[in-house]
Image (tube, rainbow, N blue to C red; front, top):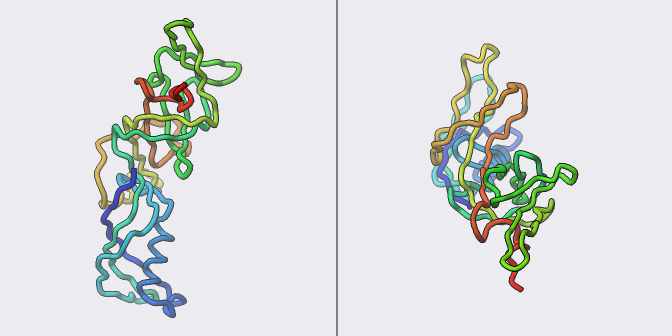
Length: 218
């Protein structure tokens, strides 16, 4: 679920921070810049782990701040494909389930990745699994909002949300550090719609997955 990623960045320390220890100022700047942010093809940054190398600092004409290349390691949330996670259902729609793990909400379980057969109740806006019990016949097992659900990660999607030039012909390149992703961005029909920079796609279409309440003994 969590990985340690080696990264490199140029840290700018403003003059009003010169009274701080240089390492403390660098740590603070790195956490302000990366904590709780998604880095393209890397994942959701959680916290600075350590600083491996600090290069020489430079002051450029017209700017009193120092600029320092820093090599560091960051704790990143990026589950691997096929990893089993437990989250909580936030909402349901015809398209499937929207799941959260507390600090990360962009998790979707598409309708075709639910237990089979499942049906959607339009009035209650809830999904349920039509389970064939050996002695009782068909039983509806609901997927209640707020309920805990166990799912398998089957895919991930990164979208580059870096602002682009007005003519959309130039854009800032994404950071090169961290593991690479083989997935393609999710197609979005409305170019003005807000895009999630990082999305996990899950599945519960196998025994043992789904609502935790389904599999409680007794």
